[in-house]
Image 1 (cartoon, rainbow, N blue to C red):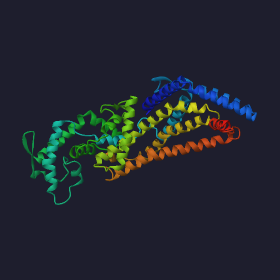
Image 2: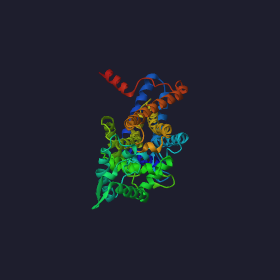
Image 3: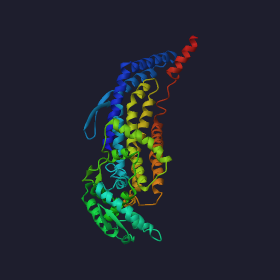
Amino acid sequence: MESIDTVYEYAGHQAALALWGALAGLGIPLLVALGGVAWRFMRVAEDGLARPLLLHFFGLVLVGWLVSPTRVAAGGGSVDARAPRFAAWLTAGTDTFTRSAIRGIDRDFLDKPFEWERIAAMCGRADIFDPALRRDIRDFLGACAVPAIASLDGPASEAAERNPLRADTGLPYARFSVRLRGRDASCAEARGTLARQVGDYVRRSSFHRRVFTTARAYDDRLTEEMYLDQVVYNVWHGTPDFSDARIARLAVGETDQFDERQNTMRWGNGDHTVAGRIQVAGSGVAHLWTYLTQPIGTAVEAKQRHYTATMLGPELYGLLTMLLLGLFPIAAVWALLPGRWIVLVRFAQLLVSVKLWPVGWALLTYFSRRRPSTEALTFGGMEDAGTRSIFATIAMMYFLIPALSIVLVGLISSAAALPFREAVPAPAGGSPVQAAVAVARAAS
C-alpha cells in the first residue's frame, strides 16, 4: 500500500502547492488577511481590547508558516518533493501511527492486504491458456461428460460436478466416444489422456505454479488435486467476461508478477500513474452500485466481484487523501479570517479520520484470516456466500469503518480540547461578514 500512498499523496501535495500559488497570484490570501486585520482594528475601537488583535497577528504568522512549503520524502526516499508544512507533518504523523497500529493488529497486512480475497480472484482466473488443450477439454466435456451425467438415474457425484476428468467420478464413460484432433477415441481413454495432459500443463505453467504456491502458503490444506479441480471447473463453466475485468487485472497485476520472498502476488502492480489510478477508482465507484443491484450469475463471478470490491478500498482511500491534501489551501485561506483557526483543526480531523481507514480494514482481515484457501475455490463455501460476502464487505469497508473513524477522531479531539476551552475562548463580536452587514445597515 505504500506505493499507492506515495502516488496519491505526491499528487495531493503538488495540487496543494499549485492551488496556493494560484490563490497567492490573485492576491486572495493577502486580501483576506488585510480584511481580517481591518476588522480587528474596528473591534479594538469598539471594545477597547487589543488582545484579540495581537492574537490575530500571531495567528496570521502561524498560518503563513504552516502553509509554507517544506521538503518531504516518500516511498522510502524514492520521491522527493515539496509540500505545505502542515499537510506534510500531518500525513507523516498519521502514517507513522497507522503503520504501527496495523503491525500490531496484523503484521502481514501492509505487505499482503486482503490476501484471501486476492487468492480467490487468482483461483477464479486459473484456466487453461493453451488453445488446443482447452478445445480438447471442452470437446470432451460436451461429448462425454454431459451425456454421461444425463444418463445417470440420480444426481452426479460432487467429484463429477467439479472435475469430470477425475477417475473417481463414477460416470459411465465406456458407453460414449469423442473425436479429438481428428481421431475417434472412447471417452474412458480420452479422460485418462486429458487428465494427464492437464496435470502436466499446470505443473509446467509458471502462472499456475505461482498461484498454487500463493494459496498453499496461505493454507497448507490446499492440495494439488483441489487446484486441478478448480482449473477444469473454470474451463467447463467458463470464466465470465466481466465488465470490470480490467479493474481486477490492474490490481492483481500481470501474471508473472510474483514476490518469491513473500510467496504472494505483489500488491498494487499495474498502472501507477495518477490518471490511471483515478480512472480505476472512478470506474470502481460505478461498479459498487452494480454489485448491489444486479444478481450474481456464477460462483466464479462472485469471487471476482468480492475481490474487486475489496481492492477498490485502497484506491478510494488514496483518491480521497489526494483530494483533501489538494484542497488544503482553501482551509488555509479560511483560517486567515479572525477566529477561524478552528478550520485547520477540522481539516486535520477529517484527514486523520480518512488515514485511519486501513487500521479498520486490518481489523476486518484479522477476524477473517482463518478462512482456509479451500474456500477461495469456486466450489468452496456455501452457494450464496459470495452474495452475502459482497454486501457485508461493502457495508463494512465503505460505510461502517469511515463512520467509526469520524466518530473516534471527534471524540478524541473533543476530549483533548477540554483543558483549553477556558484558556482559548470563542472570539466576541461575530464574524467579519456579520460586521460588514452591520456597517451597511448603519450606513443606510
